[in-house]
Image 1 (cartoon, rainbow, N blue to C red):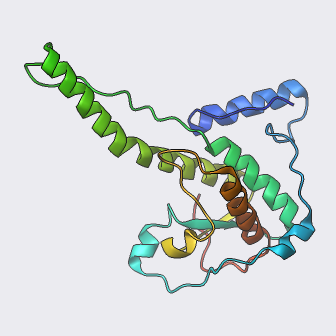
Image 2: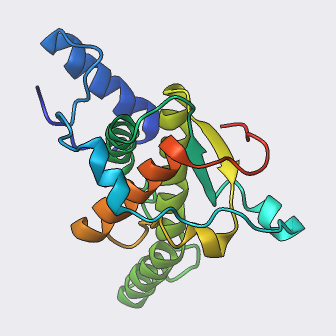
Length: 198
C-alpha cells in the first residue's frame, strides 16, 4: 500500500489517495496503512465533557469547534476513520504567494526590502489561519463522507481534546492522544444538540 502525505487542498488530495488505492486494487483500505488499536483501549480513556449552555457566539463558531459521532461504531473503527481523515488534513500548504509592492519605489533596493518585509508579515498573519481553515474543511468532508454526524461545541470544551495546526505540526504523542479521545467521542458519546451540516 502506498503511503501518501497530503500537502494539497482537500479535493486533489482525496483524488490522489483514491487513485493510489485503485492501483493497489483495494478501494476500502486507508492509503495511510492499517491502524493497530484494540477496543479495550477505550476503557483507559476519560470521556471529554460535551455538555454546555450554548451562547450565540458558540453557535457562530460551530464551523471551527465541533465533534463527530456515528451510531453503531466501535472505538477501533472510529479511531481508524479519524486517523485516516487526519492523514488527509495534515501538512497542508497555503496558496499564498506574496504580492507585488504597490508603490513607485518597487524597483529600488529599498522597495524590494520593503516588499520582502511586507510579504513576510502578511504570510505570518494570513497563512496560519488559512491552514487551520483548510484542516477543518478536510476533516468535515472526510468524516461526513464516512457517515459521521457533526455536533457543535464550545471553544473551551473543544480545546480539551483537539488541536489546531497553523504555524507547525502538532507533536505526535499529543496528536495521537487527541485523536484517541476524538475516536472515543465519535464512537460512544451521547450527542448534544442537533446534527450540523458538513
